[in-house]
Each structure stands twice: as structure tokens, then as C-alpha cells.
Image (cartoon, rainbow, N blue to C red; front, side, top):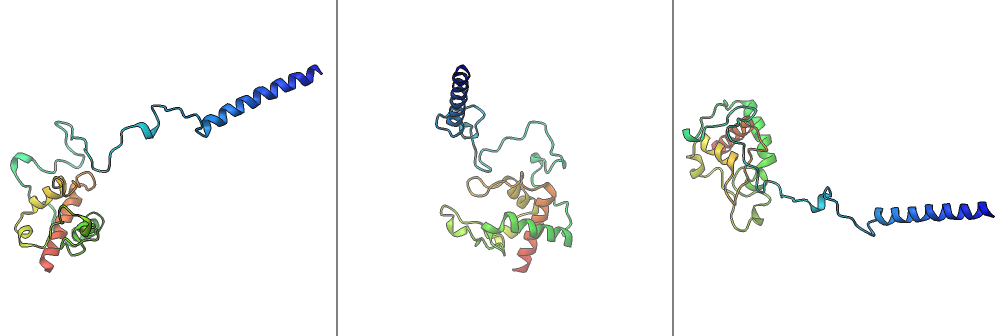
Length: 170
């Protein structure tokens, strides 16, 4: 009989322990820990990007020096550059600017406040390669995200070379 009472107490203790664990594991009683992702700050992609640390240079070297104006295109517009530029354009730009760069991409009709630029227009054709590079790198406030975090310096120049091919085809 004494053994039976001890077993009942042990099983009651284990039952209580299991009940408490189930309550907490199924969030019946929820504890908010600081490490939970849902209570930490979150940002949308490219929203408030961190500033580049002062006096720092990217791994692939400086893309341009702002006090010297628009940079010159150091990448020759050869077949490799244009092919790579076409791939990167299709991934990063086509959804807004369209396959031919006319500003009629698949999401362009949903952009109410502004329409994507027609990359084959005379205005864009007159811009220098460096100006296009800076626009791709830094974006346009409220209109186009900066792609300097998505594309390396070489890849941005490849996209510029591909845009020139699109313009020549028109």
C-alpha cells in the first residue's frame, strides 16, 4: 500500500510536469523572450539601408569618387559583358522597365505614383555611361531602389553596356 501511494505521488508529479510543459510549448501561456523574431524590429527590403562606414572602400575597390563627377565606363562592351548584363537586367530591371527597356514591365501598370523610365528614350540616350551607373548604384529617391547592394561594380557596368545595346536596337 505504501508503494502504491508513492507511485501515485510520482505519477502525479510527472503528470503535473508534463502539463506545465505542454502549456508552454503550445503557447497556451505565452512568454515573450527578447530573442523572439516577432518582437524585434523588422525592415522591408532596401528600406533604410545602413550607411557605408566612413573611410571604407568596397572589396572590389572604389566604384567612383563622388567629387570627380560621373565615372568613366571601365568595362568593354564585349559579348561576355553584354550577355552578363542581359541576365542581370532580366533579373533586376525587367519587371519594371520591360524586356526592351520601354518602361512597360509586368509591374509597371501597378505603379500609380510614377512610371518606370523608358531606357530607350532620347533623354536616357544622351546620359553618359557614368550617369546610368550612378542611377543604378544609388537608385532614384522614391522611385527606384539602389542596386549597389545587389550588384557588384562590374555587374552594374555590364547592365549599363546592355542598356546601350537596347538603345541601339531601337
